[in-house]
Image (cartoon, rainbow, N blue to C red; front, side, top):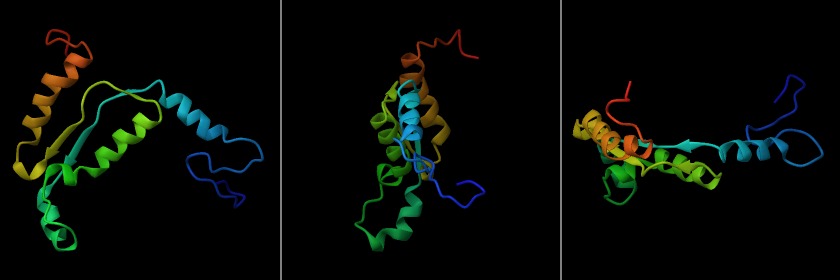
Length: 118
């Protein structure tokens, strides 16, 4: 919103009588985006909340933010360059898991060779 007290949200919630040009601009600009997602979860934090839910304590259960970002970018027309990486920091292998994903999925999808990596 502006200083005049009018409200507007980040995605096309601004004032105006016409169409949703701000939202259309977001969709148009997202269509040109190629993306990859690393979703980081922690199954240890789920144990504290387990009595509110089922007893699921998996990295996928804890990676919801990354899953939502992935779905949102895809639904807005973004092009996913490779499958999502989901890691569980409670396993103390985060850096190794992400590095392995980059070697197996990300670098090949971007046509980056070991010689061209900076």
